[in-house]
Every structure is written in structure tokens, then in C-alpha cells.
Amino acid sequence: MRVLFIGDIVGSPGRQIVQHRLADIVAQRQIDLVIANGENSASGFGITPRLAQELLNMGIDVLTGGNHSWDRREILEYMPHESRLLRPANFPDGNPGSGLYVGTAKNGVKYAVLNLQGRVFMASIDDPFRKADSELAKIPADVAFVFVDMHAETTSEKLAMGWYLDGRVTAVVGTHTHVTTADEHVLPEGTAFITDVGMTGPHGGVIGMDRQGIIRKFLDGLPARFEVASGDVQMNCVLIETADEAPRNSAGRLRARSIERLRFCID
Ligand SMILES: [Fe+2]
Ligand SMILES: [Fe+2]
Image (cartoon, rainbow, N blue to C red; front, side, top):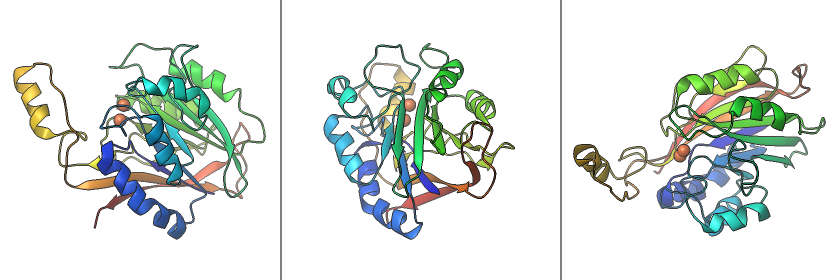
């Protein structure tokens, strides 16, 4: 089984490169399932119902979120109606939406996607580690592929989650920093891991936003409105391949054979 994960999609440049490239990538690399982080798809801040639908219609099967999941008020009402749009599971119980999705990929394999958020240098929400335990316990036994998006600021918290879930899920990938790390590998018990996938959008600014505004903010510290950057639009992804013939992991899920970083640019 081959699964593509697309790093945080930022603004219209990010949406456009996905629209432009995804179908070919899926066909050429025989992708069975596409997951993407969409927390920045609305001008860098949040996601709207229209944009969620637009991204799902491009061939993305499940959208994950993060600290920006709640930026657009209209998404709160929409979330309970679109189970393929996740937000981190460890926000307070009772918040709209869910952090876990269970579905069937186009190759017929049942899969689950779990979205978590870290707490170091971020909002002090519920413990993502204990939340991972309780959410994983809800996943039916016939689910073969389990994917975790760990949306967090620090490398340590993301790698700790990778080790914590090694042998229980197929992949743990980090998102949120918008900067790709070069540490993709498969952990000893078969869980694919990368600290951060990086982002999908313009790299001519500072983590997706216009550099002039960001530099000014560092200089004067005054409140500012940031615009999406332009230039050097990249789509940063990882491709996870499962070891279908290998024994399942301790939770009965598929092990990963490999994790590969992929970067696509606008020609
Ligand atoms: Fe992001
Ligand atoms: Fe984020």
C-alpha cells in the first residue's frame, strides 16, 4: 500500500500546486490514499467549508488540522458534518469535530487517521500521549493502516510520540513548523517517522507568510496582519510504503517498509 501525505497547505498558492500536480503524482506513483494537512489553506489561517470541499474534490481523502483549525468561525458548524476533516483529538471533549477518521482506501484496505497536537510552546490542551492511547483503542481490529499527524512545535515532542507509538501504528509524521526535516526513517517496530514534512505553498517568505510583514513585526513588535507570501511554490510530501508481506505489528496493523521525502515545484 502506498500513502501520500501532503504537508500544511498554505493559501491559494498551496491549493493551486496541489490542484496542478496531485492527479499526476497519484497516477504515476500508484498512490492508494492521500492525506493532507489543511490548517493554513484559507490565506494562511484556518480552513473554510468551501476550501475543505475543494481540497477533498482534488483527490485528498482526509484533511488533518492543527492550532489553526479553529481560525475561521464558519468551520465550527461544518466540522461535525464532514468526518474527513479532522482537528487535533486532544482539544477539549465537546469541541466540534473529531481527531479520528476510519475509512476504506481505494485499494480496499481499511485505514485510520489520527490527528494530535503537541503542548510544548503551544496551547496547553490535553495530553496528546494519553489521548493517542484512548483514540487508538477505538480503532476496529480490521483496520490495517494507521496514520498519525502529530502537529507540534518541538522536534523532541514529535520524536517522543514516534517512539511512543512505534509498533502500534504504521506512521507518525510531524507537521506545523512548515520546515522539512531530513530525518525520515522507519523505527525498529515498523512505524515510519519524520519530524516535519514541511509545507505546501510559497517558500519566498517566512513559513508561508510575506517576509516584509514578518521582518517588520520582529523589528517593531506591533500588531500586524500577515499576507501569504509569493514565489518558490513547493509541494512537500512524504510517501509511505507498507510492508504488506511482513508480519503485522503488535497492534495488528501494517508495518512501514519505507518513508520517502518528495518535493514538487511549479515548472
Ligand atoms: Fe501549519
Ligand atoms: Fe500549525
